[in-house]
Amino acid sequence: MTFSICVREEYEAREATASDGRAATPRDDEGDDHLRFGVAVTTRLPAVGTLCPFASDSGAVATQSLVNVELGRKGVAYLDDGLAVEDALQSLLNADDGAPQRQLHGVDAEGTFAFSGEECKDWYGHVEGEGFTVAGNLLTGESVIEATAEAYRDSRDSDAPLAERLVDALEAGHAEGGDKREDLHVQSAALLVETTEHREMEPYYDDLRVDATETPIADLRETYELAKEGFEMAVERYEETDGDDEMDAE
Image 1 (tube, rainbow, N blue to C red):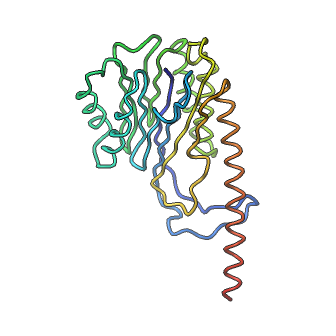
Image 2 (image 1 turned 90 degrees about the vertical axis):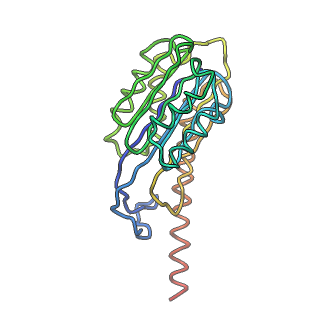
Image 3 (image 1 turned 120 degrees about the horizontal axis):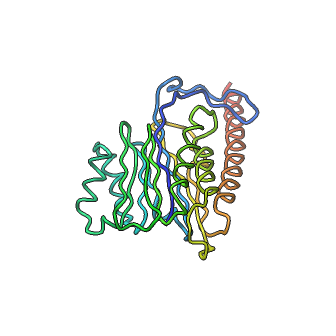
């Protein structure tokens, strides 16, 4: 089932702004370098977000094909313990009797890893790039993961949030045909973004799922846009309340 993308990006923390452009409260880590990790996935089955995408402030992992959820859970836990992504995921595959039917890929602070077992269903395959991995199976063809990878690469200089660019990457793969099982009309999609940066308010749009729909990418984009709008409204209200508290204190 499925195609997915895992990414790592370096970035510099910036002063937060409210939705009207006003500067938010200054932050101690403004100007510091940070890492963010993201994973996004879509398939022609419901609730893919419960099975495939995993991330923490140490890395991102996607487990798919004949899914073994523990590969994702333990993979991220191993990254949190300090193992390199290649060592962590390969060790899990070595202990998994079903490895020939698995796809497993991910990124950590320094490296990438991608595996497609020889018993995955055609078309299947993966690609590793600078700071990202893409993998898929039961696809209409190789162009699905190529388009996904290209869309992400082209977006890396954008100021758009990573969550938005992950939706764009999925959309590019979906436009190439995506999952080939057209007889399955119930589909789903999900994305997850984590960062090493401490944020007073975690953006609502960094953890999204569309569990059962016939238009997964369009619905995930709409969910993202509404979540982003809601987050901006919440930040604005927070800043207004914070300002009122400061005035009361005076």
